[in-house]
Image 1: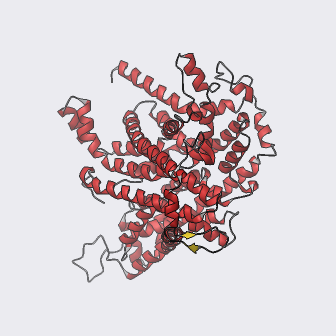
Image 2: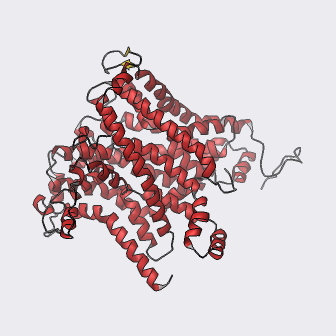
Image 3: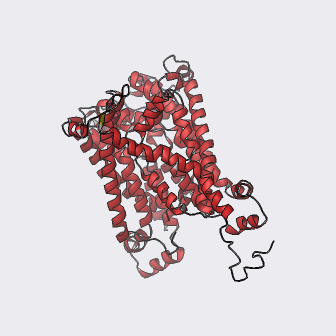
Length: 274
Length: 312
């Protein structure tokens, strides 16, 4: 590219980047302003003063049990991520590396499940949990992942398909059990894939809203996504606190992403739309 | 390494052993938890939803069979039609727009420059934000009069609309906002673009001097699988839009029901009015619509999607 075109390219890209980053930026600076300053005119593009005290002020609010909800989110997202990695690697391995009658049919069902809108399955599931008396707990939100999840199975299968068959066959001829082959030979091969899927599951669950909304009732149990929503809808005018809350809710995932970027990108491009 | 074939099977290709019974047994066993999960959480609920749609069910108390009465009630319910219309408009506009924008961004990102990594991060970041946080921030940004967007626009001489507080504009604003988390679609397209073999790309550059030709005749056809993927996923998700709608519009789709979405009405029916039958009926209608659309798309896909020879 000529220098002029290169400059033009970067100018355009930086302009687009600025638009995309604007909400983040605005959220971050608003978190350090008070309510009046947020709506100042002309627009204050940088907080002055930087009200660091907004953070401890939010954390000690009675009507926003932030720390408790943060820990709930950690528990919720962490448990799901771990379960997803374990359960989906079992199923993905079966679909990708083992040969058995009906395998492709079941995988076809899996793809169909992937495309199934949750809207049409969540009601009876909710009613069942309600009959079991387990609404208001995290059981309905976490236990489905003991069995697996269509999306992550699909994703992991793509990675498992890359494991060379010879590796497994050699182990078979040596007399290893299928479980041992999975555990000791194949899993180490796809270690990166497992981390990627775990990360995706973590981020997805951290941001999950609908599930917690319909199952949880006590504010102390809410994960951050739901806690922020409840706070904002009840204290609509307290923008400063809402922004601080939003910032602190989004920050962990952003930081995580910045440290694991390469993995995320591999995850998306390898999920294989072949 | 041990011999690849045991003494008897001299004619078998040495690389692959025949699937043994142990392998087949393990195959089923390993996939069993998932098969159970699918049955429990997808198959059975799907059937049950259709059943509940034909009952009158208030959670407490037993369901009472009412046949198609729920559907009749839906037909007469203005909230149903309003939210259906809103959701259809939302999906019809935001899905194609997102596709085009994501493709454009992916094409722009497909140059190896010093800042590539930075740009990619920027476009992926919005996807990481919890939808709740993102919606709240946009509500703040777009506050008429006092929010920064309008202040800047006014300073530039425009007279900006009231965005989320103006009933005639709110839905379009929502659609606009749906374009922010483009990260996934963009990266999917980018992956597809980067998979185009270099020699094909270079041959096209030699053959036709116009970048436009290359785009339409070479690049686009080669990423049609990604287009299909993003299209189907986009439709399925946009029809179920919920979080943004409920954060911004509450359960009534303020202002004036202009942001009332299908899923919100369904949620309201189930958890505010405890009318499980109506909610289930709505779910089945949506399912039908999405199913038909998806099948149509897949059917048409044979005409325009090209998979690379490698096959699956």
